[in-house]
Image (cartoon, rainbow, N blue to C red):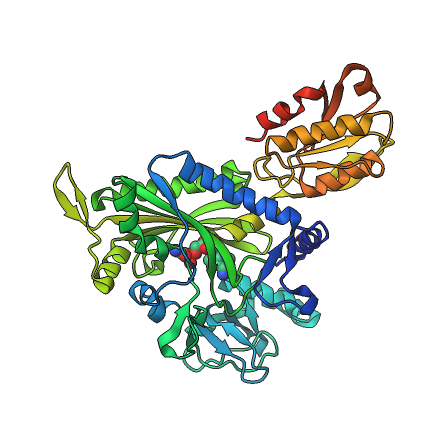
Length: 502
Ligand code: GAP
């Protein structure tokens, strides 16, 4: 990560803690790697992301229905899906410090000139390019000078720990010692169901919500009178025992997914794949992610999962690098076929118009809610200037969330705590609450400081009740981003805000 990006991430994580967006899980005991808690503002933001998705995907469409499955399922589900055998990450251990890394995320970087090795290091990175940059940046100043001066004579060798060339040694990012060969590590969390703790009672915490949908596909079909093409949507927790949880909440061990399994005729699958790929990409833009930071990356044929015919990732340019937010895959009939074979249940669909019986293909848009929240936080973070109580410009930190996602929609302030202003302000606040709008009432401190607190929370509108309100029942309403202040009738505040929520 560049110094600037590092700095931006540090400022964002500090704000998230200070203002109650995100806390480290069990922090009072030193925390636990890969687990995070959402504070009062964070939980509202996260809920708004889930609600926006659910509204757009389930409630406003008539070809998708919702589902909420258990996290622990019969372990045969995970045998059929291939997770027991295939859900592995390659890992390597340091022979000296015993640290463990994902082999596909550890690179050994060697730079040599005609006189021999100039630099040799192990680094954690997402690509060879990133690894080379990180190793150069971490080198001492003498080595960096050498690399710069002899740039055209330097020969670089960069390889991943799971792609070690014959005769090379992989190096530990912590202490430079040798790493072991890569071996497989199953990422599903195991537990036991019932009183016996033996192999007959082993169960898994689901690593994706998708399999619950496949296991219920027939139940939904038989009970909802829905016809192909149709989708089943689910939001829920998933668990993966990630070897290296990192980049804040980006790679966690417990996270939430929002997944759609969209069932269609095999002949229509290519068309639906393109539809969903483009629709999901657009959804992120519509909710405030800048299109210049979002990319839709089609997988190369050698990248495709064994069950996928096509796959594209919606990727976002986080401060720590470009990474996946959501994947859209054409999973073919792989999952339904596998469950038909393992369970013995018929997974075919009968089309009563064409009299055709077949196993549907599935298009799967699968997004991460925590990654979405992190992207919205990164996108929203801004530093600019706003006038203080005396009209002097001061620097401010502001979270420019899309109004639909903002944790608090409206803050209401009486200018002073007397002359009937608190009563009027409270009435506006209660009116907003009564319509289900998240609102905040604040009567403490200078009004400029109250604005600043709401800017950091990302509140799009602040209303102030002042002396003029007592005369003509109007209030000022301030826009978080433009800082423009409109004067509107006090009884029009709620519809004014509602109209602008998007
Ligand atoms: N059912 C398909 C599936 O689970 P995936 O690409 O493994 O596909 C889908 O996961 C999404 O879930 C990812 O795009 C990402 O947003 C989120 N996700 C996956 N692993 C995650 C992790 N360790 N922490 C946070 N989010 C994760």
